[in-house]
Amino acid sequence: AQSVTQLGSHVSVSEGALVLLRCNYSSSVPPYLFWYVQYPNQGLQLLLKYTSAATLVKGINGFEAEFKKSETSFHLTKPSAHMSDAAEYFCAVSSLSGGSQGNLIFGKGTKLSVKP
Amino acid sequence: DAEITQSPRHKITETGRQVTLACHQTWNHNNMFWYRQDLGHGLRLIHYSYGVQDTNKGEVSDGYSVSRSNTEDLPLTLESAASSQTSVYFCASSESGEEETQYFGPGTRLLVL
Image (tube, rainbow over all chains, first blue to last red; front, top):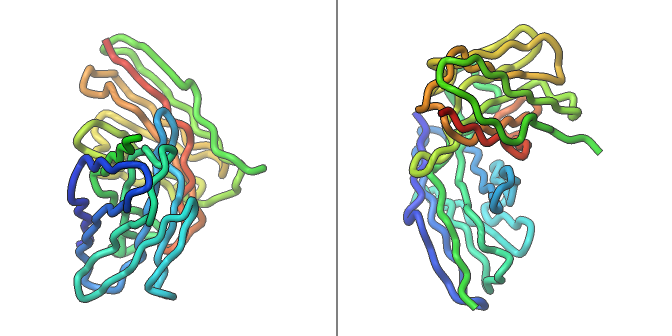
């Protein structure tokens, strides 16, 4: 069965610093992986997704993530944090259980704070 | 533009009452999902549907029901509201397929007193 672990429920960085949010997955077959962002009092929106094409995936707002099969990781990075990046970030893996047509399994989320 | 909407956005109810949360999407997506979001638990799947007349139980389905009579709508019903069902509820929709993006509504904040 697939699962997702996000290391660190809270991450705090200074404005302009590197953002690194960690996600490890468990899957017996090559997975589809997603990062979603949730701004306060809003729904989730897609940042980026890996669908077995390029291992380095670029998303919106300057974020990118690298699929590393050997490490079963899909960490999210951004070279320089902006105050507007403060939000909660969710990693998700597509469920590959029999009959699934697109169910997602979410991690518990990482709340990113950006200090001026 | 296509969108997914939820109503009401905020709801206060009493224990034991039946409550229905609406979800409407204009993407013409086959798949629709209901999640609840609670601190420390992330998003947990309540029910989902892969098409008209199709409904399935998710991880935390006890006390909830859904019905799918058309492509656009998947209402979520709390049969007899309990305080443990105080939460933020999100509806989502997607095309069929494991690689497809789910599009989320803005959420409904429910308080059960």
